[in-house]
Length: 108
Image (cartoon, rainbow, N blue to C red; front, side, top):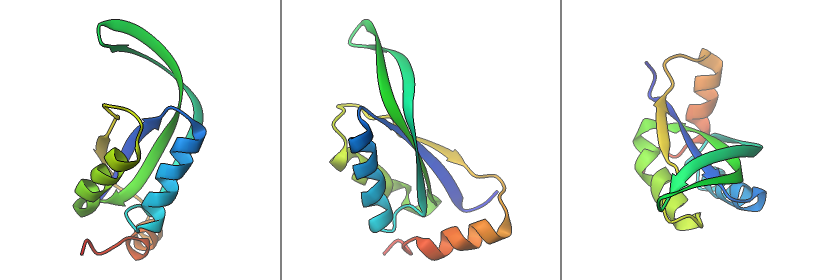
């Protein structure tokens, strides 16, 4: 296992996804954020089954930065309850992990 994780969140618009992604990279909380537009989501909200077109953000970061990433997402997000799911990066190429490490804040 590595010290890195991928955080996923969805945004209601492409503009919102872009704003969140840009802020995370600018703040050195994410090495990279991939935005996958037009994810079709079906979910239950306030007792009703809903459907929405969303943009999925895949955020590559260091495990120690997850709290700051979550705080930034909550600050920038329009949803009352944004998706924030953290998945460990079990393995990745050494060169990619080095690159990620160079892009991220040391947590201070």
